[in-house]
Image 1 (cartoon, rainbow, N blue to C red):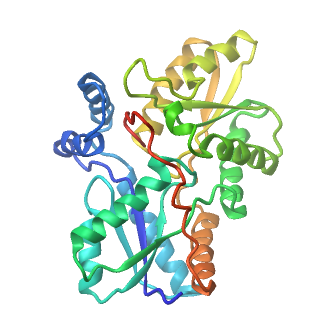
Image 2 (tube, rainbow, N blue to C red):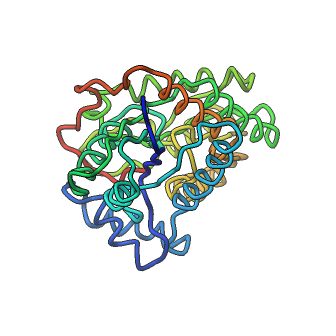
Length: 324
């Protein structure tokens, strides 16, 4: 395809205390989430000065990707737009149109298929194109990459680094929980389990589980289980003493990683007498940057786009909760 730009599409996050509530209102607009939950999440951001690390991650990723493209190609400009906070996707598409971009390839910072992690980004892109007007570029999104060998390599490297600090530990892979109604319409859970198998093999580690974190939404709505803290209690009851939590569902540190794992799960582990280490997210691991370059180069060489099927990852019947 004749692409003339790369677009990094991400979730966005507040960059100061004054941003937190407007950001959360953007995230939760149209969702049935109790205000008490929104205030609780706002408190998590306040614990870290009202700033999410996700925008800094995007800046670092873009800098690393630009350097890689300059040395290895393809030499395309890189733009960045968010779903929920500045730089907003519609503003970025207006800028791209003003710069003469006509067709772009999008990389979303989500490796797995779900409504919020895949389909919603496609909807966000089309809504932003409509807002940007008739001159907005066509944007083709790269599909989920949960099984890409370089993603597996980067994730396995992060796990090995954590296991070096706590050899022989039980590994608990984690990802953002989603409503069962959302999980039933996509391959999110299957893909995560497949990734966990491959990462454990890559790290040459046999003992692992998959648990979920950051559950939100109405109390009566069922979400994927077990919760990470409940699972730590179960492991302690089985006599496990050393645990490494590996947040494979997140490409970078988010408040859900910093608070839900580094604070809540770590406190729960300490109370249970567990030794607890959290593996780093893949972030800007060189294999991740090279993977993005390869995915772009592959799409440039392909005769036609490879979009997600029109019926993939449908919205849940009753969407809710603070996504990642």
